[in-house]
Amino acid sequence: MTKPLLIEEAPSPNFDARRAPPDMLVLHYTGMQTGQAAIDRLRDPEAKVSAHYVVEEDGRLFRLVAEERRAWHAGKSWWKGDTDINAASIGIEIVNPGHEFGYRAFPDAQVEAVIRLIDDIRGRWAIENARILGHSDVAPARKEDPGELFPWKRLAEAGHGLWFEPQPAPGPALQEGDTGVGVYALQAGLHRLGYEPLPSGTYDAETACVVRAFQRHWRPEKVDGVADGETRARLMGLLQLASAESVTGVL
Image 1: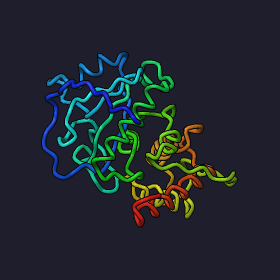
Image 2: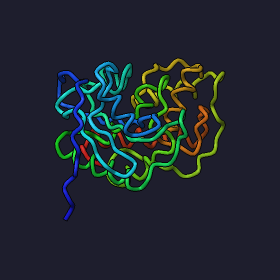
Image 3: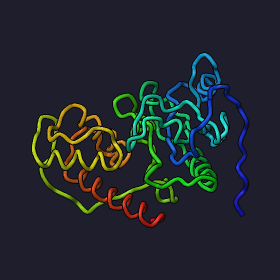
Image 4: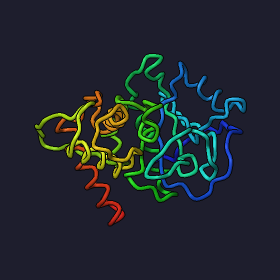
């Protein structure tokens, strides 16, 4: 029998009202030197930031904002036309110093706690796998978290989020400076998945930024902003999975 979640209450004043029930999860890393420093900041009224939950490295869980309220965790962001990600989502901060302070792997106890927390949250809200995202997905020009070391594949194997690994897919890489139909198709696929930029047919700096965000989530072994054959094959596979989920409600 699964033990009930033990969640410590650490209320933050930084929230307001939702406009609709949440239908998205956004995962972050705290990007601070300690978990306590992150919790203190998320509870500071002067900081004007918060999240619904914080998950410590040892697996301890803290609730800062009720799920029914709009926490302030996503900032300026965009996904599938929605510009108020805070209103649509539940935000989970995962304690990790991040790229600035010594990015490191996420401990097993922490990952298991994240999985159990998401199990619990999805028991209350209708959240599709295609809408379990990283902060870098909804704000690729500003954010890198939770980053390429977060085990998205393990999360998906536990039933949360999309994952696709194709057979080896050789082919010419697309990169910054390229133009043409192949670039347009890549951009159109990224936009269909949920990223903001519209296709132009020109592989510019913004496209490279979005490809890096995609790779951080779905191809963490290669985060360079270059869309090689495997990166594009993963994108196509994910689009098929997302489409199937949208039609059936399950994968």
